[in-house]
Amino acid sequence: MTKTKRTQVAIIGAGPSGLLLGALLHKAGVDNIILERQSADYVLSRIRAGILEQVTVDLLHEAGVGSGVENHGTIHHSIELVFKNERHPIDVTSLTEGKVVTAYGQTEVTKDLMQHRALNKLETIYEAGEVELHDFESQNPYITYKIGDETHTLYADFIAGCDGFHGVCRASVPKGSIKEYEKVYPFGWLGILADVPPVSPHAIIYANSDRGFALCSMRSMTRSRYYIQCAMEDKVENWSDELFWAELKKRLDPELASKIITGPSIEKSIAPLRSFVAEPMRFGRLFLAGDAAHIVPPTGAKGLNLAATDVKYLSTAFIEYYKEKSSAGIDHYSSRCLKRIWRAERFSWWLTSLMHRFPDTEGFGQKVQEAELDYLVHSKALSKSLAENYVGLPLDFAE
Ligand code: RFL
Ligand code: PHB
Image (cartoon, rainbow, N blue to C red):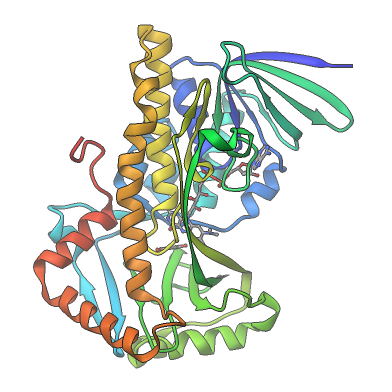
């Protein structure tokens, strides 16, 4: 038997993009249903982002889910760069006239948004299989999906593709209608999460060393997140906790290395590094948002923040459509987002290129990186450029 439902905006994907879009639309009285392939527990088990720009924190407040980040987030006023075995603080706040970033995990953001959805009795259909999009170039798009063996149909005015890089939405667009730009980096990040105090609770540390990149981050005062650059084909099984901690310490300056508190990992995973943009982000009544449309390498912490600004523009466009009967926001959605996305793509590519060891440049590449880092920490102009991109360019920057 086929079961049918109807909503104003059908959202595919219950990651941060889909959940935040759902919350912003609900606040404005726009009806929405989320279809998610995985279970809620699985979505929460993926350990990803940790650093939120002020724009993202403001959006969480706007959506009515700001109390978690307000009460449990940690404000960062600076970052530190390590190279040639020395630490160099960059005072981000003074370089940006008062701006900060907040350390607060994507897992917590997702949990807060899920709780808000449950509290407001908003429908999220988890474990929806074989999601297929139909007729999104027409006025009457719909989605079919399976729950167990049963096929269901969801009719909607619009479909929001918030289903990440490997989702079904971008893949449903005819090849001739979409252009994809991609760069795959020849290494990955091996990350671990451990219940130990962070070595640097008030600044993320980005380290360039001749053994490769390392990053010291945190989730709270008792939970740390560390990453090291690894070979693309490396496997988690090759890295015991002991090996990981030893390698991390070798990539930091000796004083910092001596302060690292080690402990058993509670999660360990390898992420590939990629830059990717799909253009445009609208196809009739289908709109892509977040990782479904673009990927940045995690250096610079832009992925989740970009997803949040896509969703801000998309929710505003839909709300304008329903409240003011205007399709101006919808028509400008793609070009508005892409301007900001390419700026973040540039920044993430630049910081990735500056901080990692590339197999084809060997000693020369390392020396050039060190010269640029030396220039960066001694030049107010370059430090300011790093700082203003790190905290996030304003939403109306050069619009
Ligand atoms: P997500 O989080 O991938 O969610 C997409 C959801 O869609 C579901 N889905 C489907 N549902 C129904 N039908 C289908 N056919 C479906 N196919 C997929 C998936 O199950 C999933 O639940 O995308 P979204 O919402 O756009 O969010 C994007 C962010 O997750 C991502 O950009 C960030 O995690 C990137 N990122 C970081 N971003 C930051 O802003 N700051 C950071 O500090 C930061 N650190 C990181 C990161 C990403 C990392 N990895 C693992 C790539 C650190 C790492 C290591
Ligand atoms: C993280 O905490 O996971 C994190 C922080 C900064 C980055 C990337 C990831 O640039």
